[in-house]
Length: 612
Image 1 (cartoon, rainbow, N blue to C red):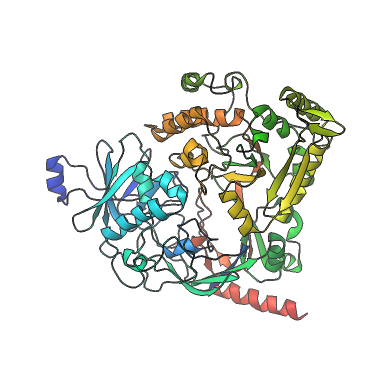
Image 2: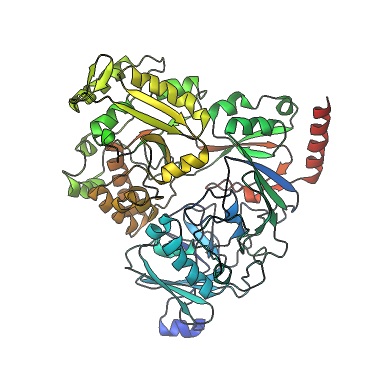
């Protein structure tokens, strides 16, 4: 299931509770949990990690990188404006302190068929779009149909097993499923945003546009400076502001995103006080990049906030559509030439842990050799998956961190020679004399310092690598069309993997431009393992099936794993407060607020510093 989205709820045939019970009909619920009980009861007032007494008001400024040319975040074309998702409400809202639970937002309740062949959501009568018009079942049905037919291609995959949506009574929407085997489908439908059918009746949904769209969420577009900045203002009469899922959230009156050419410039702008808060993902920046008078004087605050967020897989990804990378021995060989230990020590100040699973930082990560339950699954695919899955524990190649990788070079060369490559005249060539050469595509200049040492190690084996950094818009376009050889890739994961795995790994997604199968994986075994995950009947079987998939992905060497953290790194100008309880599964910046007295002090001291 996609992290950060929401879930639905509905009442079946408009029966009263007493009549429904007597007829044996399934009962409506205020929320859904994929496996297990809900933390919050039907009478809950707010999430524990949100403070209902949080102050409202003030302006927060963030940074974004690159540019944007559309305010519609639901279709493929264009570069989406950061923050546009705040314009829209979803059927359900996800809890940040539970692994797989959602509670009613646009939907008041949810009813699931006993055989799980359908789910029905009852919409709140108070739900409104920003123009005051009611949110109706027709809007929900239109949104579902439009996202599947005209939206970003991932919606087609995500909702592939949802056959249809239809109105039931005055406020109900019923979604019918291909089968009842997919436990996640009710939750997936709950993640549906709700868009106004009447607004889009006279507009092209698939076109890029900077016209602020009509939404129903906590914020509206306040100002747009095309490609340079976008400002959102909190909706004063937001229909859902007092719902339990929203109390203590959306506290900033105004949110502004200023766009910068690259992250280096953005960091300097932060230190100069041009914006207020940033989440840091570069270890060198965190270690030494914030040194400034403002940090020493306490005007800038640095926090490391622990989390339990599954880290998924960040890696150097091969494009398997390229003949050069279709031999697993080649892919395995190149992994020996990325010296993580040296990189972590010299470039990252020892901050990171090496990633060795597609589901890192969670119980879903495989370890050791397969258990008996995992073997029972994997043995069905013998001959289709690497034999090493059964006999070897996957570990990325290691070094001593000194920069001397002679042993790794030898191991890499042996694999390359077995795959038909030899070194002649200082160049690695195949039997036809074709050189081993490829392009490593980047969108962030700061990654060059990581990739260039890797390229130098490859050069020692006669491999030619062109490290090319392009602007973010061009990069996004090329990645959406799979026009790359090697690039940095990220596959985020939740604690409840499901249908989104088809988008990451399935053969169908490999041929769909804009899908998240960036690697181009086409494997019947992987397809079958993904189907098993989607149909997992309980948490124990889900974990076992994810372990099996994890092993097959790892032993095929589709990527060179990178690194991960187990905490958020947040730098801010010291004018924010946040709840005493943190959400373990998300940063939840929407629960933070501005302290007016501290904000005034910061601005006065900042101004005095600039005058000196």
